[in-house]
Image (cartoon, rainbow, N blue to C red; front, side, top):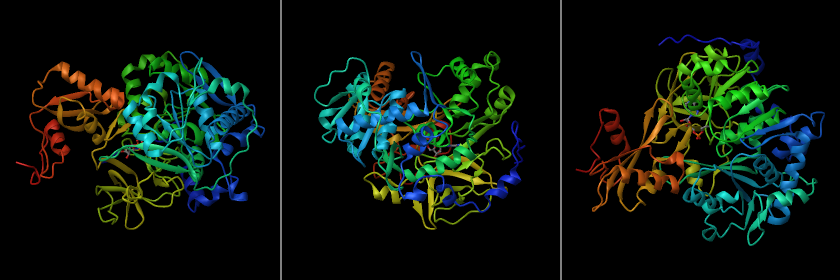
Amino acid sequence: MKVEALPVTKGNYNLEDYEQTYRNFDWSEVEKNFSFSETGRVNVAHEAIDRHADSARKNKVALYYRDSERDEKYTFKEMKDMSNKAGNILKQTCDVEKGDRVFIFMPRSPELYFAALGAIKLGAIVGPLFEAFMEGAVKDRLEDSEAKVIITTPALLNRIPLDDLPALKHVVLVGENVKEEGPYIDFNSRMKEASKKLQVEWVEKTDGLVLHYTSGSTGKPKGVLHVHNAMIQHYQTAKWVLDLKEEDVYWCTADPGWVTGTAYGIFGPWLVGASNVIVGGRFRPEAWYETIEDYGVSVWYSAPTAFRMLMGAGDEVVKKYDLSSLRHILSVGEPLNPEVIRWGVKVFNLRVHDTWWMTETGAQLICNYPALEIKPGSMGKPIPGVEAAIVDDQGNELPPYRMGNLAIKKGWPSMMHTIWNNKEKYESYFMPGDWYVSGDSAYMDEEGYFWFQGRIDDVIMTSGERVGPFEVESKLVEHPAVAEAGVIGKPDPVRGEIIKAFVALRDGHTASDELKEEIRQFVKRGLAAHAAPREIEFRDKLPKTRSGKIMRRVLKAWELDLPTGDLSTMED
Ligand code: WT7
């Protein structure tokens, strides 16, 4: 299939120059930008904030924040002071030390960023939790990580089962009129008194930085640990792929509960000293365009679901705003439809640049970087310093156009360090030949562009969020009416996939729309809104293997009217 490549629409990029410069690229070159090249020790929060605060850039705006109630900005100097204060609270009132897990469970706000940076300055490992998580999801994560401190808001407190979490010693509350008693600490009042002076903890580059829980096809969510060394790639990709320059105003729409919101919502942009726009609250097309217009956003990183929603809101809305500041647009999280790219060229006169990576990879790997011609539908090419291939199940490289496992050669700086408490799981990601196997299937064309085909496992990507079917199934069977449940991703034009559950009821329960809604709400309350099935179908029996495993591929085939394939392992 011949695809018309899209040349660069704005800016002056030369692919030959670029490839020439980086032909012999070595990641160790990038290290030279950071303190560990001299001292052997480092701290990302210092490199991202304090380094600029102590330079001529100190009065440059680091953070623009707004939501429906607040509209604030902070310079690098102010970010240094505020994160030092937050660090002092954590150190003095919660005894946080290097290696302790400090979780942050709250909606986006400047305080979230002060607290995260403050914890990192102490050498603690930050565990960001998406605000929509409900009690079950919060408990799993705090329990597995043995978090010592959680920073949250009074409104979310009832989702933290304190009595079941013996390792959790302190609860820092960000809110009004907080009473300090028992484990509770009043963040806002203490920020007023806390000292602006803090000694940064210098750590090894392999010391823990962030712990992101993510879903697989089986088992509970796993804790992907990233270390300070990841900054090398965050910094370099912020330059190459985000194309951030000194004067840029950058907006990443992802929440720090997901890896995009830390790697490219905190580290990447601040490591290169760009101004970072953070917007809280819900999605509304007008508000998004307003954000770009008001702040003069020049580089914008978002997700296919959001672009599709903007597309759905119509081209007329776009014309109401002055979006001429935009220079570079990027996307991540799910396949980027060629249609979205064509729409971007039409309404913004810019290409949308797809980027491929995962929680586990820590940073971008396969990308449509600015100088590259874009083939709509392709994720682009591996960035310099990254070797990607399509391999078979034994780790043998496959020739162009053969579909197989998308794999990356070990050795890129931001690769996960381990899976928390689960070395075996970590090791299961690798194949002979030092290949990291992504779980995605793809092929490569003769020019080295990669084309995403799907997940090899049953993991669901809904509105860019990764949901493990097992987690949803486990919650479903906790409902008293549910005997068995099987969960699949069903293709959806806006959300990529939606979650569909097939449910067999226990004796004595009758199928009804009310029951469907009750079950939906049950999952929503127990896990998270985005993990609740949008569709539920009752069935007398679910297809199972003889060993009792629900056969999701058969459910999917039923749903999509596809051949069910080999049924030899199915019972009856
Ligand atoms: C899975 C990883 C990296 C932050 C967002 C998601 C899918 C990611 C693309 C893309 C097609 C993509 C893959 C991957 N994915 N980017 N550009 N095209 N699919 O991180 O939650 O760890 O999910 O997202 O299936 O394995 P995540």
